[in-house]
Image (cartoon, rainbow, N blue to C red; front, side):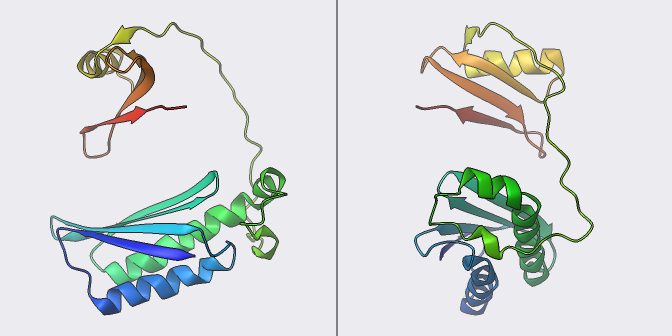
Length: 176
């Protein structure tokens, strides 16, 4: 597994980079060598935010941690990613049974943590309305929702606006 480390508002030391690579290398045994892990380190308001994303040929593992100690944050990131993989081991094995990039048989079982059966408890249909991103954000706020799906009139594609934890907005753009 290849690890790409990006820093924002800070400079990552060589020791920190080596630590990140060695910690994530423990998860590397579950993937082929051409899988990439992207790690972003951001300094904000005296704290460090660590985001790790592993795109495993159609399945994305992601963990995020904000901490005062970046080294303990890395440990928690690896723990979260490992836990995700273990919790969804059976479902991932079914999905990727012919995928040689994932080595899920080696994943440890999570003791005492049963994965509940995922089920859709409510379905809702609605018409997509062509609108701008600003109009979609306004509509989302009027509905007091945390996300809103709409037809972007500029790109003529289905998009989603969402409220972020920092009270800013995000935009998900689809492509096919």
